[in-house]
Image (cartoon, helix red, strand yellow):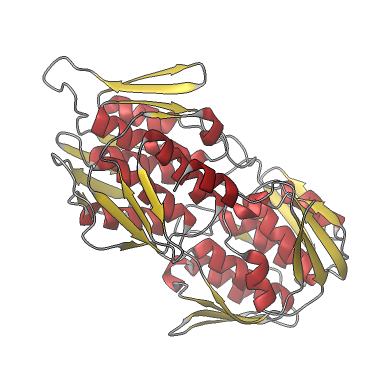
Length: 440
């Protein structure tokens, strides 16, 4: 995948969605591979000089950005139309992750662990991403220091290296890493570093998300020793080297994409089956949908949701997995605008993740923000209007609200959507929506 090819595949930044509502969604929708599982899997290719093959990699902007970042370091990145990506980091030309790419995607910090543990040094720009509050990387850096790395922040870059002197020269050492709070990227970064460290690394208060389990599955297939992924304690015994993948590693289905379309079914009073969705990855969210009166069914094809004619209000509190996912909070807020009664939504993960509430109010929603709590009174009649997305999941909430609103809703800055949803307009239209992508 050349830099020129990557540039041509990136969507125009000013595109907008025009949504003609209201509608009821009906049918089946294919769920793509999980962006948040594919990103650490792509970073894992840096751990070996052999070929790593990934399947079911979603065609979204964040994946293209990570591919461009790896290609810029000298990794061979070959993407196929069927979602297979073949990578080989046998001849790296650089251990630097530049600001121009890292600033657009926080997950780029995941190259730090692999670069440091395999090559002994890394320069990684401080990351950017969605405008949903401060998401510091200090937990990553403290963990690497505990493993013997030397860390400095210089001119907006993290410079990490391993001492070339002493008994641990050139290798990270195993350590006990006790996170004060679960952190998904922090857990994944330490896992990626620990697999080639000398000795045993123990991660306490580890993130339990399905994406962490998927990374462990990939690393194990490459020859790593990882135990406990999916629990709060992960134990990793470092090995001398890793191999490539004997078979393609299939990325798990995207639980957040699935949840978004299922929320849309509940919001519009529709009937949608999210193909290949795994109910065990969405238990807290599906329970909340059921509390609103929706019918939730696990089938051989995936998960089916039939929306209630008159949804009931329901309170949620976001929490690390297996709690209610923060990445589905905005979509549930859109649903709550149509629920009978008052819903209270408490956001415990990010301190600035209610920017979509202002835009939902432009459509007619009645939402009051009190610190970490959003109070949503419903049902309210929504009317189409121009709205502006502030981040990836806020974009999805505005699209969902537009499906219920009367008249035309124009959602601006949908480049946020392109970061995490593959072909959203086409998928929604396949369910009976009327969504058109236009140049802004």
